[in-house]
Image (cartoon, rainbow, N blue to C red; front, side, top):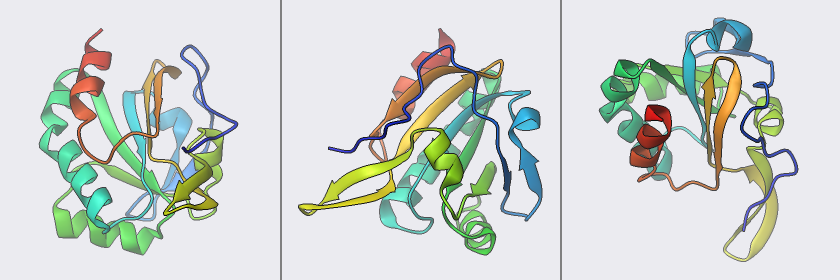
Length: 157
């Protein structure tokens, strides 16, 4: 089981942050969240699970945009690694670099997790839906694939 002390609840204002994107441009959350956003936290670009998750978002990108949402991924990876990930998989959405996991912590997407019986702190795969600058839904411990239908239901409500 994975846990974080900072899990967000619906109705809370989205925590404010600044982070570089895959093009090494600083992105301010206040500007980013001027649009409704699906912000997903992933452990590491290029790994099998994270690649499948990004491809899943890319495959459904038009469904999100047609409902007025942008998709944004965030990981502890470097800007350079995120740019290579974007290029390798022809991703058409923003990726943010959070090497110190500060944004992850703000959003409850970093905490204790157990893998192969070993307990450690790391990225908790999470997806947060932000509407009008507030948390609409925060999903923690999601699987790399398969949560897109649930997200589409959430943003259609």
